[in-house]
Amino acid sequence: MFVVELDKPWEESGFMFQGLELKSSADIQAVQKECKFVWVDYDEFSLKKTKPSQGLPAAPGAGSTADTGVSVEDEFDAAKEVHSLASEAISTLFEEIRLGAEVDGGKVKQAVNGCVDSILRNPDASVWLTRIQAKHEATAQHSLNVAALSIVMAKAAGMTQREMEDVGVCGMLHDVGKTSISTEVLSKSGKLDEAEMAEMRKHTRYGRDILISTKSVMSGAADVAHSHHEREDGQGYPRKLPSESIPMFAKIVAIAEAYDTMTTKQTYKPACSPSEALQELYSLRGKQFDEDMVIKFIDAVGIFPPGSIVEMLNGEIGIVLANTSDKLRPRVIIILDAAKEPVQQRVVDLSQMDADNEGNVYQIKTTLSDGSYGIDVADFQRAGLRMG
Image 1 (tube, rainbow, N blue to C red):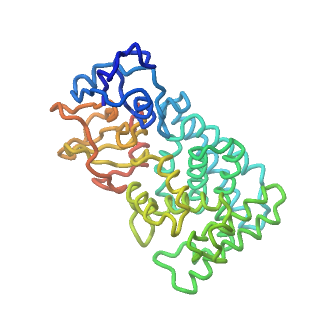
Image 2 (spheres, helix red, strand yellow; image 1 turned 60 degrees about the vertical axis):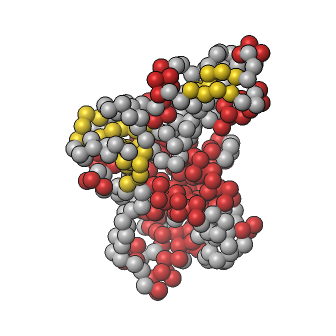
Image 3 (cartoon, rainbow, N blue to C red; image 1 turned 180 degrees about the horizontal axis):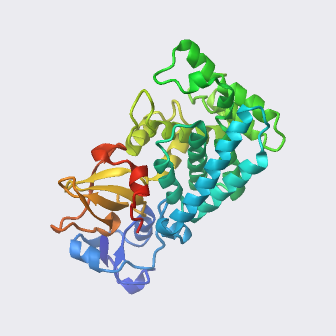
């Protein structure tokens, strides 16, 4: 909303300009320190025409340009190249391990460092790419997605660049033990039976053994490979560890791993929409997942993560481009009209109260799963989705 008048003269306040757009909780807190009450203008024209005050720093969302100075449009191509190189490297690495070679820690660190650099510039671009690559079910691609999401979460938690790199390595290698699982079990279409599930669960121990014997990889990666299926309630595997005994990086990777699995189409179940996956993570906080880190993850990727397919109140369909300082009002690329027919792509910024052709302010009605109305985010982007 837009503040048009304070309960005292503007010149007696700490605000630089008369007129103030509230875009975040930080803005609200700044006003609360100065005033007991204010007058606000809900008028749509005022919100669209009045320039926001520059007197208050916005509290940026995960992918706002205020976060790093680089927009998702500017970072996307660079992030895509980084992810492509990392995907190729990790696929080759996993195949080499399957054939008996040792983990090449240098290659892993190089791939992860490129991801960290991109995420520091703009995390939304990398979140986008985990959605674009979600159709691939290979262990290597899943591992890259988990690494990227873990880094994004570590950034939101205020960790150092070194810690972001370390958690990225852990995410990249968390499932390395699956290289010791039979192809028949890994590629089975349908749910695993009890014996197959017991074999699959051994990947945590296999991963620990592989990484313990690898001197070029940080020792904590072995702990994460061994512990990323442990639970806050002590009912996880393989050791039923209590919460305080689970490494923090393992807690981070567990959330990223679950989110990527839920939003990826499986042979035995369809993919959840990103918002549905976030709701599931939230419902399991304190039980399966660390409560604080679930909140950090949701804060990092946004209520409507980049790459989400959304339906607007007017029936139009779009794909979320990037977060803004208002988590409920991202920037969206409109791709289908209310009749669900293709339209010329355009970006609408819900945080700026952009309106449709009828003058109605855009609002998100619901999120949709990948494949809704024939939309595959990966195929759509490759076919020419305009990022700006």
